[in-house]
Each structure stands twice: as structure tokens, then as C-alpha cells.
Image (cartoon, rainbow, N blue to C red):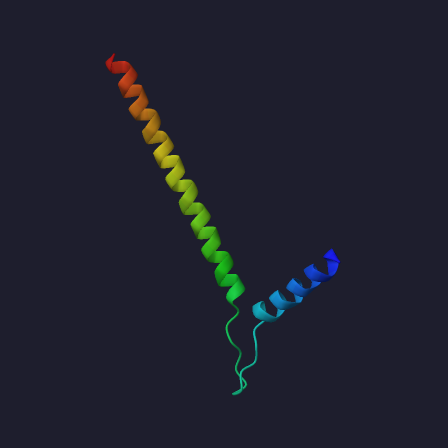
Length: 68
């Protein structure tokens, strides 16, 4: 039962991610690579922000403890 539902979603995703031919013979752009690129950029930005704020937090805590 579980394999059938996974197969259904896999086939549906395959239809959406493959470039589809339009009526004029041209293909719609494939959205999957652009989605992957956007995800990669988002993950990089998230990691960059986390690193910046973690370092800033560390600096603030050091300043607070040194002030005592």
C-alpha cells in the first residue's frame, strides 16, 4: 500500500519537473534546477547569518564578562 502512494507522488513530480512541450512546439522551462539553486542560496544565507550572529553573540558575552 505504501509503495503505491509513493509511486503516485513520484509520477506526479516527474510530470511537473520535466519540461513540457507547449502547443507552439517550445518547451516550458524546467523549474527544478532553479528551485535547487534557490534552496542552495537560501541555505548558504542562513548559515552565513547564523555564523555572524553566533560570533556577535560571543563577542557581546565576552564584553559583558570582561566588564565585571
